[in-house]
Image (cartoon, rainbow, N blue to C red):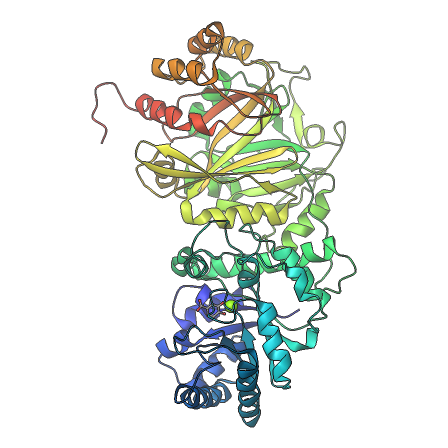
Length: 627
Ligand SMILES: O=C(O)c1ccc(O)c(O)c1
Ligand SMILES: [Mg+2]
């Protein structure tokens, strides 16, 4: 299907927008009249610029306050329409969006409105153009696509059709199933947008909070299915009014938009296979089995810091890569790699960020299929040099410049550890009793969060939890947890630079993994074993324990054990959660150890303010002022 995006969705000048839209792979644009008026090019020049980018103008919009007016407003509206039709001829586009009226003089009356559209259809026909009627969900008399359709149906004119916009239908909680009975050839255009579930004024919500399909909470897939069920075969166009996107990088926003369109079409066809969807076939999203490894990029002279922390956390060297300067550190089911290569991707990551997580290895049911899905959803393939006999491990670029590798070998002689590594110690390393990677946390600027969560939820079979606020003493950090099978990741978005997360972004020069949380089955035994390894546990203050005991009605003996080991506690309806943190490294990176009991699903967010305050205290020599 043809894909399109409204120019209002992006920041920049018209030329910048066109370049970004073309680069992202769209077929066309909805030209927003304001963008045209603001540009200094003639209509014919703008039309040529669009076509020079390999794009077409799928729609000219919006034409406001047209239907249901008494004269002289009515004749003025027709005169205005004639001017716009002329302009459309010069731009080279044949479809205009008329959105439902909010004019104070509008009178309503379905047959009056139908008559207005019949006459407008006649006028449009003289210019060889068509008009589509869209119900704004705050329109005065028409605020529901079913009423807009009834106006269009009664107008009975070949040049007058319906325009659907998922926001106006879903934002007003209208059942998208009602679209299924509209003939597909009477739908002239379809606009898609999602939005977060926030209870607020519809107009304000629409103009500031829309986001890409899949980024919000509306059932855009259900809407899409209903549209496709009508036989509609016209463009699918994004119309995203969003304050963040208006100031974001246009290329990034455009690419996310195209990714979201491919994703929503794919979800529609998978949930309703009878639908004809004009989209190349690619594999279904997979749930991750487990995080197979996390790799740090470092350099020869720099590894002492990270290696010291690894030892203090109970890890031991367990092997080296057969051809590269990469050390495998192990404990229980956890594999961590330290790469000190002085060339290639790891080195580039190190140069850009300092010692940093550069690669994440995910074990999935079918690695090639995961790679194919990733690239179909516009993830960049990551090429690699492999030595003779080494595994070819498909890889894509992740968020923040990192790499995600997909592995699917069964454990044993054919797996990465037996083929690509020389294992020095075949004995399992029990260490401090860590059993696996519970989650990793990626820190980024707040306005990168939607993009990052879209990446995970489109490439993988992954689910988002509701976003939570984390209170840092120096500002708010938002946290979005995402889970795909055995992989959990939390995305932390910092708005304020002085927050722990904000400082980390500045110091590591961009989004990256700030902490890794390891799982244990017995956090008290692990804490004891860690103490024997000189683990730099983060000291938690006395006030915390008094509160947590009162809040959850804990046995004072349990609180006492937690206090001694600096362990934090949380619970939800499903179970209990224990956490133990390391002090932050000078670069802001740290480790966490967690124990989940029962079916606890969270990440200890209520503890984050106390943890962050403690980390900020520990990062400062005693007696020093804060800034
Ligand atoms: O907010 C608006 O006015 C507006 C204009 C045109 C549209 O297509 C729309 O969905 C909203
Ligand atoms: Mg719209």
